[in-house]
Length: 206
Image (cartoon, rainbow, N blue to C red; front, side):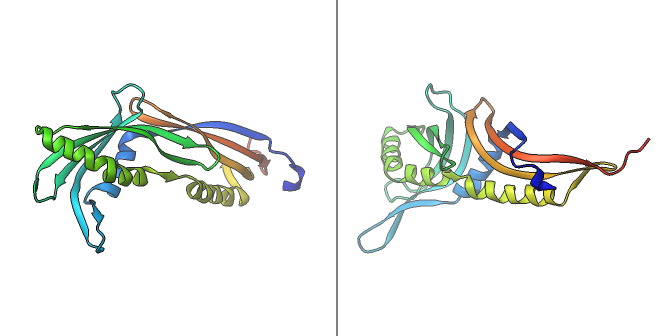
């Protein structure tokens, strides 16, 4: 019966809300406990800081979307076991073709009481920490979309009973992120969906 539908008869723009707390949980799993350092010419890795905590929220700085507040512990000989905070103001980038979210622009702001530590951490952040953050915050959406698309189409292919005697079936051909809009407490993701579907009534209850 699917051959009756040569063109998609369902086109939707579906908004999806993701609270920053959800994204924060993901970043904490990726970053907390991470030691950041550099490998020297002998192949020995020297760690400079360890990430103790990470908090994410709407940026209060103009022209930035989010602020990542990192609590760091220094591991160098000069500043051993000093706890400092580093604010990373972030502008998100989104490549619709490749379906990739990443860090487009950033600005660093140290928050310790020591000017020397602040400058040392910011110098370190510009060379090492930022690379780590950019890598951890880069999200390729294609594998996730492909997985969800497969699950949805598997259910639609078997017919879903929406009500007694009423069944839904079809196929989602296009599922992609069209736009990302940072808000005050959440990230709004607009999904573009193109599909065909039909309702099969097998029984009418009076």
